[in-house]
Image (cartoon, rainbow, N blue to C red; front, side):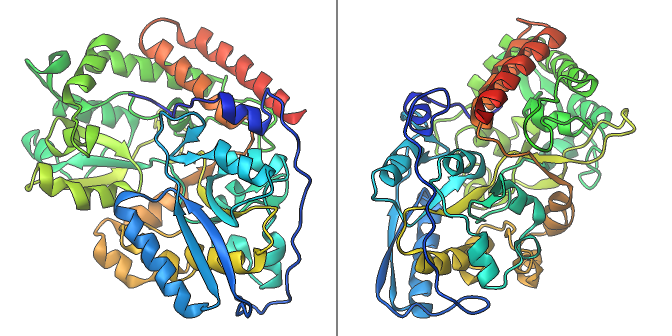
Length: 467
């Protein structure tokens, strides 16, 4: 079970210039028309090349966005390109083939608008490959930190350049999902989720069922460590990076305490790392829902996930367990640290960005606004029972009616979101943290030593990114 996304990176690093060569793109600025507040009508016929990764159940939602936008802007044709790639492909991250997209931009045939995660957008921005959209927002009298949740705008910004607009809320995992069947069986109250690390450990012990199952478990109460080191350390008042993303800060007392707590609880829950791995291998499924089947079939009592999981439950649970019911709380913080508060670290957010070389920036901008803060976005997120990055859209009362946990989703989770300072080095730092965590959880290294080595390596990567 991975703690952070894994990358195959040779070609990606080559084109983005992190530890490799590659020509810098000149900064490019398209000329924009005057426009009106909130946008203007595109009068000339134009085709926008739009690239994204929304396959499967989201593909018809994008098609609907394209269809409805045509009624608003009849002169703009959207060339809707789903370029989803498998995670095993070279240069693929999160389903987007970034090396391929960058090669198009560098070769002078850029997509006009494309989907990119904000940490990768920092890479692209450093190379002059993205349009700074702040000037377009200013022209249309849009105050981005008021239109969107400020943390999302912060993650979309790199060295003063707003690299795109958020099309979803951040990809953090603030939610603790609870199996009603497991909770009822343990005599626990589903309406009282754990409020501290200590309570989480106690609840996990009560939900655990040892037996003849994989790893000696018929059910794991909680899959410690479950979330990444960086997620847990945020809940212990620790910081990963300085605000300007130039200094590593996670080799702190909070960092050491967090990593040791993760290791201790993992060993207590599973006995050892091999048992944990055996458990997850045993409950994994070849079904489309993959490892999520274990959640629906009561093999796990509690688990963490993001806002997308509400849509997954809606589409999958009935297939594997028609009686599946669940509760939701927030992943708790360390109450033994008086400085710790409820927190959720947002490492990145999905953006829609305009290529610096696009000659159709005005039309691309109208399409971007429609699918990030307009009716197109409302359609897309409402169908998935998830919040919009645009504050105004989330005020729609239909959202709370469709999701009984809406107060937790919006009123609480978005309020505790902490943005990671964006740096083009993060895509190389995350695997370092992933390895550190695995080494410590497996007992191969001690927490203090592994943390110090990871911090030194991460600082080197940050320093390289500044040069």
